[in-house]
Length: 258
Image (cartoon, rainbow, N blue to C red; front, side, top):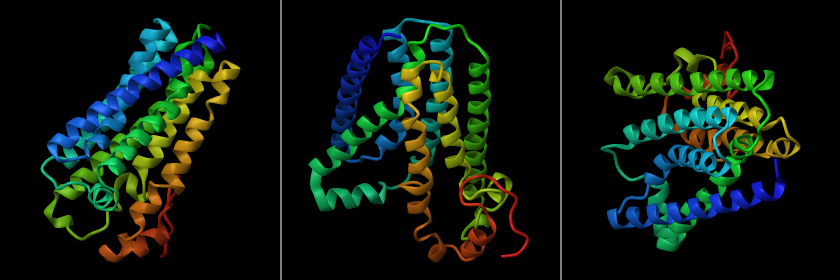
């Protein structure tokens, strides 16, 4: 891998993503609804992986990484689209518009574009590696598959639970949600550790370990789990007991008593 060439292509990808997100922002503003950026989160990574593949040229590893990233990103984008369809604007974006106006909202979009480029660095690095596929790549596929299963199954179980009128006001503690309060977040983090392993053949790829570390920290300690659980106990009777007996992130058998 040529460090200079890789760096230049990462810069080109960053410019492309920023332009794309700016166009998305313009469309969202004309529509008067900004939560489309949530849908774009997964789809954007899929686009980055395809753009990187075109810049780097097709290789077995590049094709495999792009395929896995597209599968993950499109599924996540469709899931969020289906969840938001027919609902109201995300309260977070309503609050941002009230406090900071349109420029503050654009800042949210721009920051997300930068984060996407940084988090996708393992995918970009792996696409430039020309070494034959080996044991580490097989391990990467296995880790990715475990994460994808947790995320997709967890999302599907929660969607079914919310769609059941009998579940209104109750706490989801079935299926994977019995072993972790956030199987979808855990699966998301594991997916990115799997994608990182594809890049770990080269010292430049090893440096991109900051991406899965940042993703895991954000989901477990940053804007993921903590924000979601902030007022859950007040809105859901029995949630405090669920927290006491259920692992917060990494799947683990529940405690027998709360």
